[in-house]
Structures are given as C-alpha cells and as structure tokens.
Length: 423
Ligand code: HEM
Ligand SMILES: *[C@@H]1O[C@H](CO)[C@@H](O)[C@H](O)[C@H]1NC(C)=O
Image (cartoon, rainbow, N blue to C red; front, side):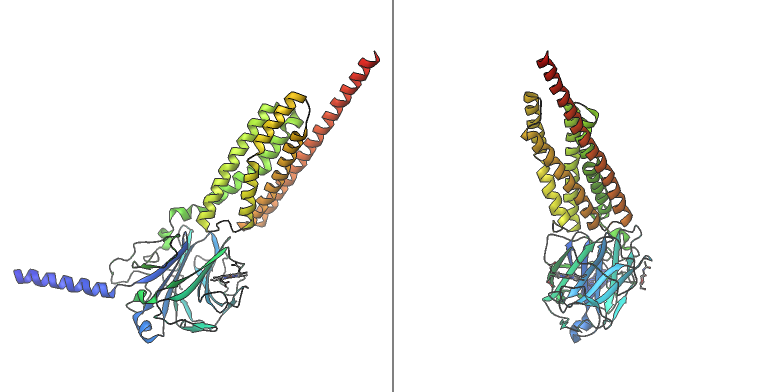
C-alpha cells in the first residue's frame, strides 16, 4: 500500500518535473496598452543558432498597422508589419528598413502565418502567430538566436484598418516607436512548434490570457503562459481598456465638435441675433465650457490608451486651445462689469469677443486635425467642414447684424440728442 502511494507520488513528481522542463517560455514586450510582441526560440534553434523562431504580434484593430523589427533602428532592421487582411485574418508583411522612410517589402524572409492568427470575433484585436525560418540573418543584419541582449524595435500607427492581403501595401509613418532587448535564453520553447497556441496534449499553464502587459515597464517580461493566442479565439484577449478606445474616440470627437462648431458659436451670437439677456449667454457658454473640459478629459484618456502621448499636432494644439479658453469666462465677466458701468463696449469687451473668435476658429481647425489623426473617412471630414462652414456663415451674419443694430441704435440716440438740442 505504502509502496503504491510512494510510487504514485514519485511518478507525479517526475511528471511535474518533466512538465516544468518542457514548459514553453516566450518573452514578451508590450510597449503600450494592447500592443504586445512575443518571441519564442525552439531549443534546437538556440542550440544550433539557426532554424525557426516564433513571433507573435498583437494589437487592437484601432491601429492601421503595428510592426516589430530585429535591430536597434529602422535602418538595417528586419521588420514585420501586421495589419488586417479584410477577410477576418491578418497580413504579416516582411520588410527591410532602409532609413527614416517606409521600409521596403522583403521577399527573402521566409514567414508563415500560423494557427491562432486572425481578427478576434468582436473585431477588436488582431493577432499574428508567425514562424520565421531565416531570421538569424537578413540583408543588413543578424541576430544570434541565443543572444541574452537581442535588440528589437517596434512601431505603431493608429487609424482605419488597412484590410489588405498585399504585402507591399503602402503604410504611413508611425505615431510612435520603441526599442528594447529580449533575453532569448529566456525564450526557450521545447519543441519546434507554434508555442502560442495550447498544445493538443494539454500542457499546463496555457491559455491564461495574460494580455496587455505593463505599458509602464520598459523591460521585456518573461511570459510563461502561452499568451492570449492560445485557444480558439484570440478575441477574449482584448482587455476592456482597449475595447473602449473606439467608443471614447467617438465620444471625444462628437463632444468637442458639438462644443467648438455648435455651442460656442451659437452662444456667441445669441445676444446680438436674438437680443437675449447676458445671463442666458453666460449660462450657455458655461455649459459649453464644462463640456469642453469633459471632452478634453476624454482626449487625455485616449492619449494614454493609444500611446499617442501628446506627440501629434492635434493633441498639442488642442491642449493649448483648451488651456487658453480657461480665462475666457473671466474676460466675459470683466466685460459685463464694464458694460454695466459704461453701457457700451470697451477694450475688455473687444478683447473678450476677439479672443473667443480666434479660439473658436482654432478649435474648429483642430477638429479637422483630429479627424485626420483618427484617419476618419473623407465623408465625415466633408460633413464636418460643411457644418463648420454653415455655422461660420450664421455666426458672421449674426455678428454683422449685431454691428448694424448697434449702429442704428447709436444713430437714433445721436438723432435724439440733436432733436433735444434743437428744441
Ligand atoms: C511609412 C513608414 C515609416 C516612416 C515614414 C518612418 C519614418 C521615421 C522617422 C522620420 C523617424 C525619425 C523620427 C521619429 O522618431 O519619429 C523614425 C524613427 C523610427 N522608426 Fe520609423 N518610419 C516608418 C516605419 C517604421 C516601421 C515599420 C518601424 C518598425 C518597427 C519603424 C521603427 C522606427 C524606430 C524604432 C525609430 C527610432 C529609431 C530610428 O531612428 O530608426 N518605423 N521613423
Ligand atoms: C488565418 O490564417 C492562418 C494561416 O493560414 C490560419 O492558420 C488561421 O486559422 C487563420 N485564421 C482565421 C481566423 O481564419
């Protein structure tokens, strides 16, 4: 009886020891939320410093393309560009970096797209598991497959899906890029098979869906799970903060367009056009002002989640405009005090009016930059431009009407004075 238990325990121990030895380690690096790169090197490849390596690229479909490269910089890098192919799967285009210009596609690289690749069922994530048969050397460089400090680069571009199976498809410049090293000795996979899907034999620890990673941690992590590519659907792997990006983008865009194109300009012409009281004007503009800050907060969340981190003109310009708007309510209040005292506009009034006009115009233009940043369709850009033009005409009409009304009032007052003098 005892010996039976002992042998059972022994075999269990032996089994787990073997399982531990056989467990696949892949290294991973997630430079920003949702974008992860993983590498696995079969033990045989590491030992012979030749043969297959396995790569995984994963990203939200809010990116037009996401790329991984071997090397320290674009020039001379062996690059793999991931994008959707338009049929629910993905394209991984091997390219060679030649400098700060679009990398050229490289037919030499022997890449094979593997199981687990594709666009997730909810459309939120694209994922590629690839085997590279000759990534030990490439035109322009080489990488030892047992290098403990192998240099890699990554880059990503947010925007509409490329939906192309053409490996030569034109890509536009990245939003941002990154470089790091992988300790390939920590990336050992036991057998020369796709390490990113659960083995049919059911190895332990697979499919834990450890996605996302730490965006703040610049160091590569060792990923002992099989990664989010395991199992049938990479779908579940997109974390909530990535899935929300398109919704937040729309909310930010709609709110800001409403504020800059509709609320502020209409609030500005309310008084001259309809002769409403200053109280309504002030209340209206304060609502718009608060909505603007809410829109800005959404923009800040987006900047963080997309990794764009204020390196685009839309974000920098927008931040400046919103900051400059902060003093507009004070100007309005000073104008009000002046008007109450003198019953006419003074320097502070014109400053309030023109400061607001310039900022509204900048805000409207910045909306266009935002649509471009989001790679929105031309139809949306045209619709935005038309609405902005119509509102501008109403605004200018309202402002001119206000000028005429004041002239007439001034004229009437002057005539009244004359009449009194004459009598
Ligand atoms: C249309 C394609 C591309 C263009 C026009 C382009 C252009 C540029 C430019 C102008 C720079 C220097 C300024 C900056 O830091 O932004 C740069 C840097 C960089 N790019 Fe690209 N790039 C392209 C694609 C890629 C791809 C596919 C990768 C793949 C990983 C990549 C990775 C990098 C990296 C790591 C750097 C910093 C190191 C270096 O200067 O080479 N780029 N790129
Ligand atoms: C994508 O293509 C690869 C390679 O042909 C295949 O193994 C994988 O199952 C495909 N994915 C989908 C979602 O069709």
